[in-house]
Image (cartoon, rainbow, N blue to C red):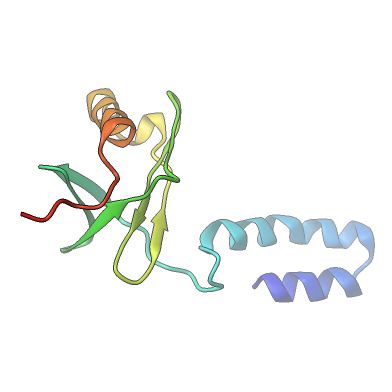
Length: 118
C-alpha cells in the first residue's frame, strides 16, 4: 500500500498527491516495521511478575523491555515475545484509571535484569 502511494505520488500532480497522504499515514500506523500488518493484542495481563498478551482466545507470555515509555497521559509497553517485539499505546480512555496506574507502577519499578535461577 505504501509503495503504491509513493509511486502514484511521483506520477500525479502535486495537488493530487496530497490526497494520498492519509492513505500512506494509515498504512504506516498499521505496520510494525516489517512491512506486514500484524494483529494487535486485545488485552494485557500482568500478574505475579509475569506479562501475558491476549489475542482473542489465546494468551502469549512475554517479557517487558527497557524501551517501554511511561508518561502520565500515555503508556507504550514494549514486550518481547519469542519471535518478535510488540508495541502498542495505552491511552487514558482505553483502560480504567486504577489499571493504568498499576501498569505504570509495574513498568517503572519492575526488575528487568536476568531471571534468577533457583
